Each structure stands twice: as structure tokens, then as C-alpha cells.
Image 1 (cartoon, rainbow, N blue to C red):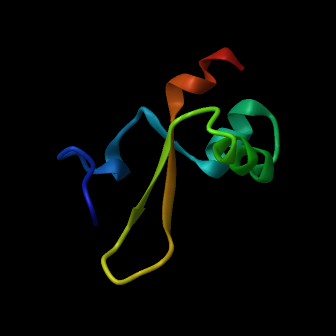
Image 2 (image 1 turned 120 degrees about the vertical axis):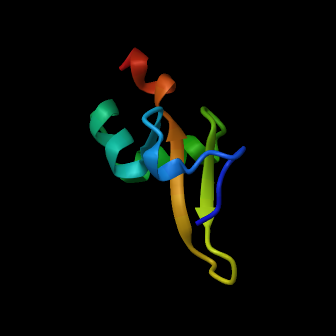
Length: 66
């Protein structure tokens, strides 16, 4: 698993996955991806070397307003 700035994202409490963010914002996962495409908030993907897909993480502080 790749680390972000030396931190393993699986154990970080200030990051949400797309489905968790959708529950926080009371919307669909598709809307979360739409907002990511519009650069409304910071997100990043963690992938393993040699794989195309990964896990998308979103900063949880953004969802404090919902």
C-alpha cells in the first residue's frame, strides 16, 4: 500500500471514501464524483504499483458543513 506524506491512509480518521462522503452529504456517490471533477474539494487516489484502479479518498473536513 502506498503512503501519502508518510501516513498510511487506511488508518487516518480525517479521510473519507466516496461512499462514506455520500452518506455524510446525503447524496449519491455519483454526485461526489461530479464534485470531484469540478474541483470543489480535495481528493486523491491511492493505487498499488501496476494497477489502474485504486481507492479514492476525500478530506473529511469538507463535509463538516453538511
